[in-house]
Image (cartoon, rainbow over all chains, first blue to last red; front, side, top):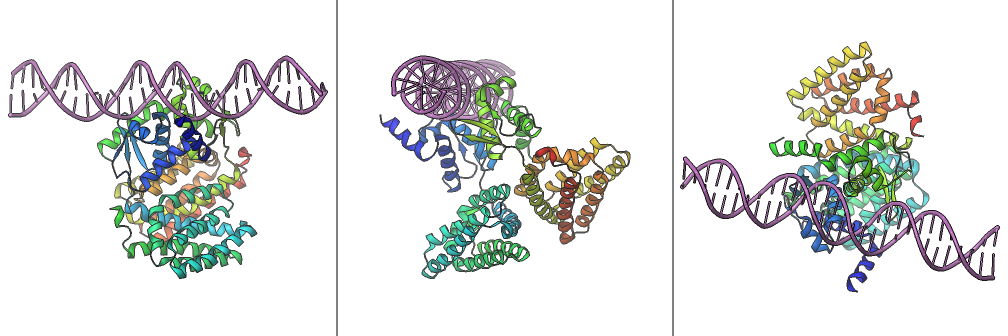
Length: 226
Length: 226
DNA sequence: CATGGTATGATTGTATACAATTATACGCGA
DNA sequence: TCGCGTATAATTGTATACAATCATACCATG
């Protein structure tokens, strides 16, 4: 039957539970559900073709991530990202990416270093040609390599979460002219890691985040969150 | 905090869902469920006197917190805290408590500063008399005041999470002789905040965490996680 | 007309039923 | 005895049923 076929297809990619969670999460981050909007279990369930149970479980997780607020016996309300939150996250990330880069000096693998180098090289190519989509993808990947190379599941998990969280802003940021500059900063960070200079790597990664944030402010890219 | 927030917090504390979640969380952190142990939905439900539904919802949240790992169609397995995790958390907290203390310089209220002062004064009293339980309570409270005074919900939430996470170790740590030393460090941090010296406050809070961690290592308090 | 209580509907909270999946035990045959 | 397939049990995944709670509208009463 159609129903079964669809279900099978879905299960192949993600578990149903994971799919529901990620879908709602994405819809919130993409602005489909506005700030303070109430999310009804049945409505969303119908839209995704599932019952309330998986939706409720997704809600619990989204609440823990801070994307929605659940008021018992009342409902679930979208917690929009505030400008202040973005600022805080970038300052927090500044410290943590610094720590990450420091740890990466000791723990990065040969393969990870090579992929970083390739990443930066490729990004130079795309930056020169204004290929914004590829730039965004490469930036994404650079930071994920960095996170994976610090040999700390705790820190990796934390940074990936925040990275995801500010995804919308990041897209915008890299669509601006910062892509090339950002890539040069990546290069310096990588070189500091390569020459095993933790202080330098930490300082550079630190500043990289602050620069990214200040660029957003200058370009007025935070207006979308007001 | 307005009326609505208060109401929610109170209701949540006594709601079934909140109780189940916190209870299982506590049982994991207290070591009732050992590393790699499988958690069965019905068994835990029966123990807590509820059905599988609230238990499952709690599991989803616990997975997001990294306390358990859920393998689809197989089960939920406890992810024990590793020594490495504790080390990582303390280094992460070092950076973040520093940032928190920095922000507190600008944002702390008169009332919060007064409560801090009272907290430290009282701790001196109990430290001199070896009242360990009160010391633990006061330490707990000192850090929470600090978190609340930084004017960042993001950072406050993050630090409170980690604070909870290492609760077991903290108890042990303060049962040692470090209580008095720790309180002096609290005093210095508070004074730096009071005289609005962000660099000093950050550096002191930074070092406070590192000292706490090194004390644990020296006293062999991490053996319980091996 | 204002106000307060109550009925009603909508929505969430919990329990249970059923489906799908996985693990285990058993028997059969080589 | 070992390997293998199948039946069976145990467990999770999902849907639904029922209970509790909350919001709203309406009506009675002053």
